[in-house]
Amino acid sequence: MTKPLWLTTAVICSALALGACSSTRLGGPTRGAVGAPITEAPPVEAVPSGPIEASPLPPVAGAPIAPDMTAPPTGGTDIAGLPPAPPPPTIGAPAPAPAPAPTSRTAMVGNWNVQTSGGSCRVQLSSSPALDLYRASASGCSNQDLSKVNAWDYRNGEVYLYQTGGAVTARLRGSSSSLSGVLAKSGAPLSLTR
View (cartoon, rainbow, N blue to C red):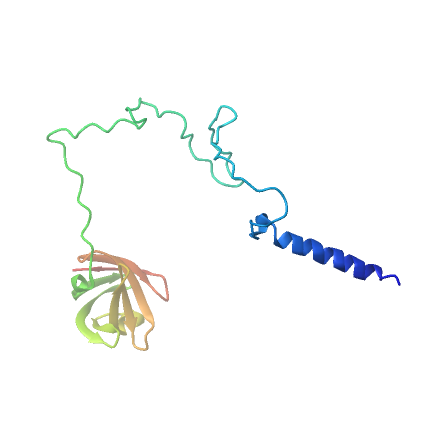
């Protein structure tokens, strides 16, 4: 009786798979394996086959081109290939202006004179909390939005003036003695001074 072809193929494939399981390449046993014993080869040291050259990579398509960093800078270089250090400042030269001191919320508290295109008035910024803001009051303001100011806040270097209902009346930037900005609705310029 003849065996079907698929059965013969399955038996051959199974035999090959079992043979591969005993191979040392797949982690099978090394003793008693069929074939010659395997000996480990001595370690091989990597040796370059030719001279090694370095060159900059081409720029990425669409990227801005940076100045050539392989060329020496003009004016000579020091031993490490860096440009020479700047000369020391001369005695009697004016010192650079100090950076302005960072402004804080507490520096903004107090009375302010307000100047707008419609006239002038006064705004007082208080340190008394009003929910998550601080109390404010306006007096003598002809601008409808400024006359309704009742709260303020200082965030990210800006003073925000709020009116009843929580709408932003104005955003201002500056120092503890002078602020400038715009009214939120009209975009009209606005300045506060002490």
